[in-house]
Length: 317
Image 1 (cartoon, helix red, strand yellow):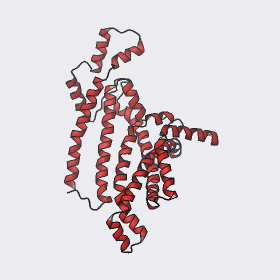
Image 2 (cartoon, rainbow, N blue to C red):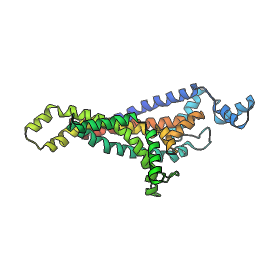
Image 3 (cartoon, rainbow, N blue to C red):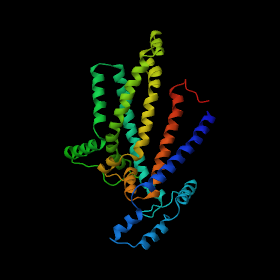
Image 4 (cartoon, one colour):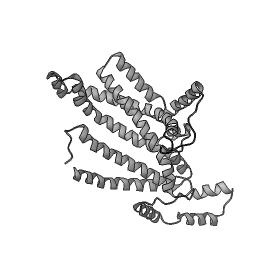
């Protein structure tokens, strides 16, 4: 097991290195120049000498290999550098928004799991009954309804029915748990509902497949308690593909909720992504992409480790 863990950790390095090279090259290939954008906001004309001086100050006049080596050297020292647009440390820019995005992702994942697992299990056990049709209708509606549109309906419903709107200013959970949940529980419900629709359909399909396996029929033929057969033999094996979907969606939620964040006035990583690309802020965009890549790789690594607990037949030797 230890050898497997070390091997997987070492294999992460080439993956992250490939992501770093790809995002560095793509940011330089995209049309647009951050220096010209900065001067465009100050005046309609800027001399070539002024543009070259600003590029030298930002370090953009150096050869690409030197810029890349400087960036990788900073990453090795856990120094993401400074934003080319604001001039502030990138670690601080990300830290201000990472807490919010992470909390929304965790809450949305909790909502999705609490909805998907019991509903998918119920639909599989009651296959082709009105319960199964109701659950499938619920999941199809979740796939069809965009989370940002559902968020707008939630806000309008709270305003019309109760005359109340979620707080606009973000409050950390350690400062006021109530005000924190009052703001973030609604985007979590909107995102978690759509998130649960995918997991519900996966749970139903996996359960139907597992319930037809020989070992399940054998356990029933032995006269074991039906609930024991369902939970000990069927559910744990059916959770393997469902857990994979949940983990991958969680990694996506960290930086992929751009429109939903705007609907609920949340200044998270998704909005920071859009702003950094619009401003051609190379260093900030590179740091954000690499952060999401690290979270995705670690999430897949954790999923592989949990497989051993869910399915005793899997062994990492």
